[in-house]
Image (cartoon, rainbow, N blue to C red; front, side):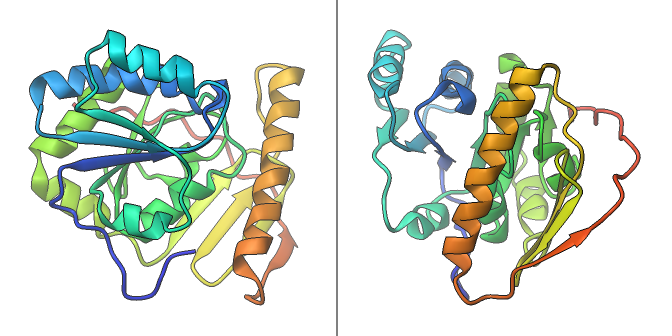
Length: 239
């Protein structure tokens, strides 16, 4: 949960990603994307925080791409708030999500986010070009391009990061709105491409809701029914 009075250092040369070292989180796509970024901006570093079975595989990929000085894998930490505050760009490279809690936390700290427009969540949490940048799901080159766009356009990064007081997220699952002190999250019927993807997303969102409950503690936590909104077209990436 965001700490009152804390905000990111938008001028730092650090990007951050947070999540399990698992296929869902797409770090196998983020690391090659960062290889492109590092060629243009070798003074920038990507810090990834997480745990999981694929850490060794990702370490080898970093070695192969000669990114040892630019892309660093870390264990999960208890002081992730401090890591957010040391970063100016947050990257979500997931193939699919339930409720991307880390995206909401990063936005609440004022970090400029770049995310794949995956099912479910980022497309509705982020208004493309206003409070973040969206990228076609799985497009590694476009992800690198949008990260570079924020690096090379400091004013745009600051403008994106300024939208931190309240974020609203709509994801395609279960017609539920979760309301807490700093966020409003909307869930509607899952629009997955397969039954397996729908099940995976449902399981993921269940874990995330449970985690929210633990993080919020005594903070008001209410559920309301809501009709699903009309579908929105995929936002165009900013050149």
